[in-house]
Length: 155
Length: 155
DNA sequence: GGCAGATACTTTAGGCTTGAGCTATTCAGG
DNA sequence: CCTGAATAGCTCAAGCCTAAAGTATCTGCC
Image (cartoon, helix red, strand yellow):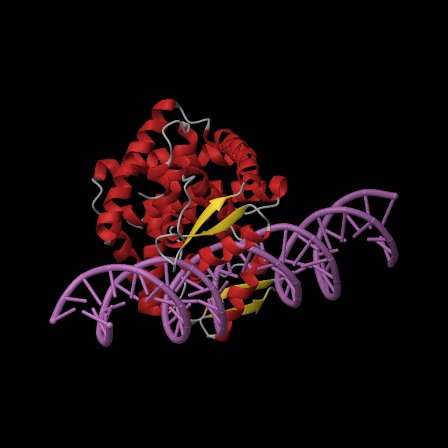
């Protein structure tokens, strides 16, 4: 019996929905984190950051990374520092704004990310692949609505 | 455009589902964390731990808390230490096993938690209440399937 | 031009979280 | 009994994350 299962029957709908969503998310997240550590000796935040850079070959500014990853700027500074030290990422001066950097994957970073991304997708498919296509699509749509509503209500 | 929206169109279904789930979960989590800090100067992990204790008035052992909260034992030690110091929680010797504690809410903890739980549910309703009853129920059911499948596949 | 406010980034203190390694206790077989 | 394995809990180092405060630069407005 875990947190979500234990919710007493008189808990209300929205609360139970949130607890269940959190449980699902944590289950998957733990699995992925653990595999990233085992197989690649890295972490989910590092992977997420590199994944953004891979989608933006022209590079991203620190504050763009911060917004995309939904974490604070100080946090991005720390993670980028590490990846720079490991040679996976580089800070390039931004020509138009001397306050800013353009952060990019190095060639080594691009290569390392490609391998991790392949494995990562396999793990996710392994975990979630058992859902029927119909369920998966329904879930996608409902989560889209949830996301829109949440964004609206937290603004 | 956030992480999930940015996923390129050729990303596969399971991966996109996972990213969307993560985004939803993080949006709600950030909101709740921020409000817990503002209004009660506390954190989500502390709230979660107290919430488990509130559901188990007879007390819980450290390893039971660890399992219920899906975090490691060392983590539970730290959070319980703090709550004990603040007088919200107490460690009672377990009569049957001298290695173990029974962790319980104190009267002050119970009172403090009741107030926080009321506010917490309001915040969640405020955030998610916009979903129709039908959508909420469908989502509950699909997430239940997802949870079952994930548990099965990560075992 | 110059100044006020906004913006880009870093730093710091403090809390969360993990995995690995430690002690103490319990339990199951011989 | 007693010994080895399992279990309950703690400690530690390292990394993630936040909010707040600090520096440097840019931008708009007079």
